[in-house]
Image 1 (cartoon, rainbow, N blue to C red):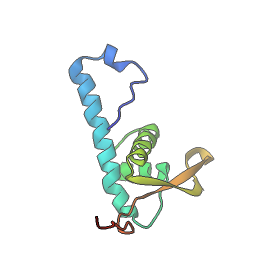
Image 2 (cartoon, helix red, strand yellow):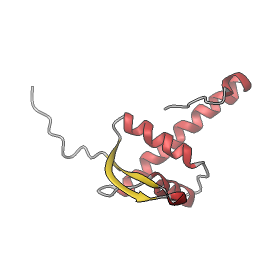
Image 3 (cartoon, helix red, strand yellow):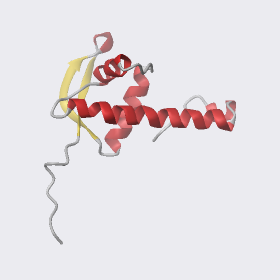
Image 4 (tube, helix red, strand yellow):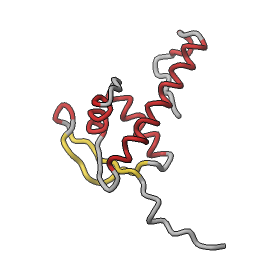
Length: 109
């Protein structure tokens, strides 16, 4: 879970409101984890994930989706590919995929 306080909200909000922001961030990452299962063996871009999330009733900025994807990539849940596509606003964006653990071989001790 990562909430990047780029606007100094912690200083502006009460502790309870700040905690709610942290919980909301965690929920966004969980939604992406769940929806990424629909993309197994397929790749997706931030704008594709954003569109799917909106179809499921989650209204959030594309920047929040990008942040969550970056965090999940750092955690090893998602992997950035070399593939690109045209996303929102006609800009190229990279594609991600969910990491498949089936191809990992664990050696006995």
